Image (cartoon, rainbow, N blue to C red):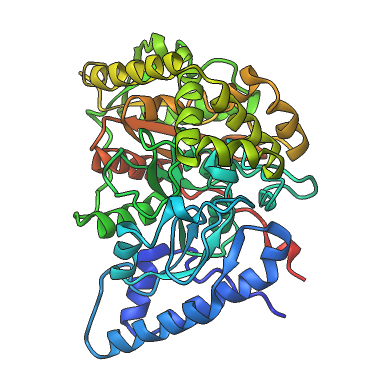
Length: 462
């Protein structure tokens, strides 16, 4: 079978929207192209838990008929998307990456998926996730770990927990994908797969119909091929005008050198140095700031999240289901079962204090800039071995957890073109509710850095 090209490359959602309305393509044509690419490529990459070809084609045809009749649903009409398999979609099971039955915790299709459908998207399937959305590396021994499209031979982790969403976008299996972010679960797979990621502010998008890992921290987000695509999708789903690129001069970004720039892999450090130099050349002012509590946030996160997971699963289901769980998630569940109530209460209080103090932290700056991850994606074997060491495990998300603890919004932009063989991301953290600002900065970065290299996925098509 001849592999069709990615129908959204290189002109993205905006280019497709123009071609669709000029009659040069159709929702059915691009949906069929993505389904063909999934059939050819996903047996190797394993991004999807479930592919709903029949419903996707039927939906695409319905949108084509609507558009022909004069009904235009907006910029996302006819755009094929993947949805992380912790999010309920009518007619499809939601497994949350587990063999345990947790459907009662998720319920029916929620308000966010309803908004996706109202916007005219075509859901092609459910993307894989780390079990219970709790794995930073994206490993899942019970339902399969997707393969990072950037690795030619080894099984390299895609980042988690929105692992399948990251791989699906990077491999050109859908136009964009939905993920969730509790401590980095949108930004880590976006970074490790070389694409763009947007973590939204807690409460901006409703999480009904979504598996509740940590109701205190859970947010939904977007994984896209570009910041431009994310700006269009966010505006359509949030009911706002699309963000415009910041001009550069006058932009002030805080550089938290106390923790977020420590222990970087050599290639990460090199790429970040070039990226920051480009920012300065564009008239952006970098201001050294201190966030001394950053080092404490991953440990606090490790108290809050397992405790809330146990509350949602229930102690009986959690303890009796340990043998059927992925080893990484089982360890996190055990931690929750053994956690003292006082430790959880103390963690929640610290989180609340950090959120309340975020206003002063951002005073005088437009955002915070940092590497998204201090390290390059490792092999699956290395990631599983590291999961047994709490300190090494926390190091994976030391740069992403602060945005969740601060109640902030954040983006990650690929910068591996500046000298890395594997993807590297540059993170921008903005105050809660400032998605438009974060996206405007990300659009500036994209304008300055240019389109990142894409993974060579056609090599596996057989």
